[in-house]
Amino acid sequence: MIYEIDGARFATLDEFYNEVSTVIIPGTNWGRNLDAFDDILRGGFGTPDGGFTIRWRNHAISRECLGYAETMRHLEAKLRHCHSENRSSVAHELAEARAGRGSTVYDWLVSIIRNHGPGGRESNDGVELVLE
Image (tube, rainbow, N blue to C red):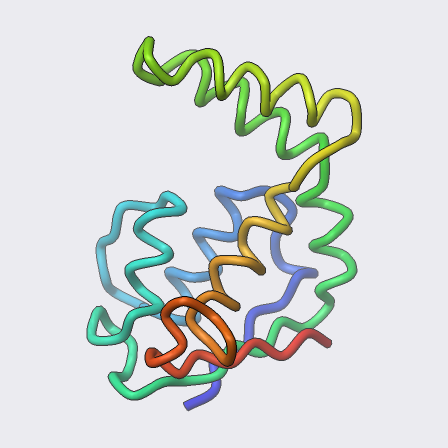
């Protein structure tokens, strides 16, 4: 099974979640957060057990749109709502993003997907990422 997402159809993390809802798991309610996206990739949650391919068209557009500005937006929201014990680490991530350092939302998503594919910690899920 091949799921094709298109970076030209989303510019924010929330819009990425919309793309996942439309393309990968249509008609399924899910948590719409990074942990829930990770769960989807394990299979059986509207996705096939035994693996599948995510073809990410226009990924260069996503790399730009889901870069530091979107990362800062996401981390600022997270900082407002996170547990007090997590505030310092989120604040540090936010400071790094503001300085143009560290991982971006795009990097997080690619890393989550690749974790479920060849060489990843959960490679038995058989998820292949193709960046186009």
